[in-house]
Image (cartoon, rainbow, N blue to C red; front, side):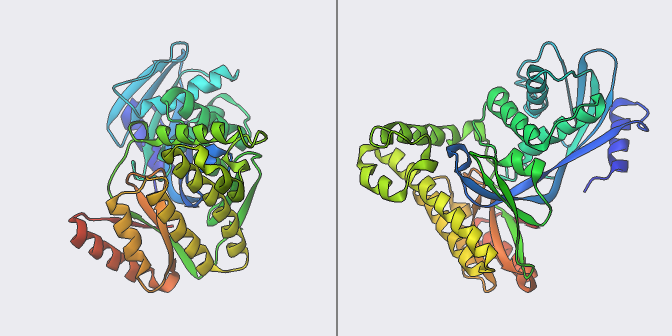
Length: 377
């Protein structure tokens, strides 16, 4: 993990400026234990923060220009606060500009700044790197310009930056857990009411992530298409169920009764979301009762649904889930994140974690000729 001292040195080298008054902010990435593609359907999710972050070393400067340095790319970008436009050349900079644009539109007074950015969240791995940079940027502007913003407002400003400026129609989950998550705890979020609850996991188990090393870009994936198909399903079901506003409101019984009104693809997407919401609520019961095997079975069911109904898995993710399933000591595994690559999340008995990492990496290497990365949360 980068330290304040590290970030000050990165800032000094990037801007050739005295780093002693630099302010350092950070925000974590996340893994979603269960509840995939439910957040933008007003549903339930259960993410948790991970020990990987985006860090920003920032200092105010005269004028209205913001200068950026991305240490991980060794790239620079800049923009004027009164003339913020999408940057086709530096995609990473759009998350910063999107946040600045959103904050300005909400009436927050910002000024010029230098910002050095560094992260250790694997990009394209479905671990919330974009939300982490959004929340870290908000925190940086807050400390530089004396702003007071509550964590929930921060989360929604990050979401607005991603939806309205970057163009990814994501839900609130990633920003919510990056802003409000608690280390070592799962976070149940009701994405309609914003109610949330921190859940303690059994200390005899660890959450282990395995990265397929298959990267995907949300804006070029079928993510937005899946969202449109869910919205289509709601419009058609509303003819029979006029009180519904989102798939969150549709019971499995009503869906089974009226599913023939939907085109096949929309029907499959809606079936996944409705069942996935139920799985999240059952997962809460399993965790509170210490039933980790029950949680694991729900995770396997979730993966099968994401593979067959939502169709966002891939060969590499399926290989890892099946390898985890047959490893003694694993109670559950599934793909996590939007899909089309990225990581699996696994619940593994603490004493078997090292063996799990070795076996899974070897299995993946021999099957795909690719070296997976393993992260222990």
